[in-house]
Image (cartoon, rainbow, N blue to C red; front, side, top):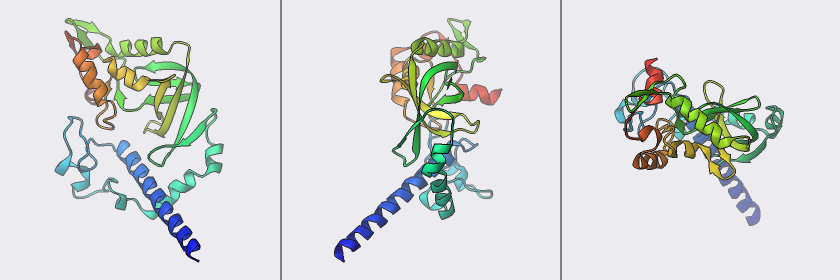
Length: 245
């Protein structure tokens, strides 16, 4: 009887832990796809400051963003579990995929193949459009200046990424989709994190609005004065350029 009781307690504890991981994954996805700049208290804004009292969560009226575990309903957890069922995973997608659990309790998808570079932070492997997560590269049409002369900084980022990859296979770990149905991923060439490499070269910025993962890489690029941080270079952050245009 005691053994049975212990097993029941263990299974209940594991179920609670799994549900918490699911809630955390749902919240992260909700914040990632939030249309505004500041969904939750203590979230990082585009200027690097904390949201605090400016967050949409603390404003009156309208539907509040998902910020805390208690904001996620049981129905949402049940829907998430249904969407992540093994049968559904096997039936989705047309690319060869290997699935493994991510640290957030969400299923990651690994896609391997030769990549076509679309721009400095987007590529495709066969029919899969992939957005490199945690960074933001200048747009292809975005004007930068180097030594007072026009410089196609977005094109430079795309060409550098294409040269780095060449004809080799890369592996992308896809964790979710963005609002444009692109896969969000960290891509690697052998052991090289291409997301981090782009930021280290000064060809892209750490996308602080969504992640602080590559802030150390950006700081290193600034210190070394690489790419966008080189002397004589002036540029506008990609998110501000898109907002203006």
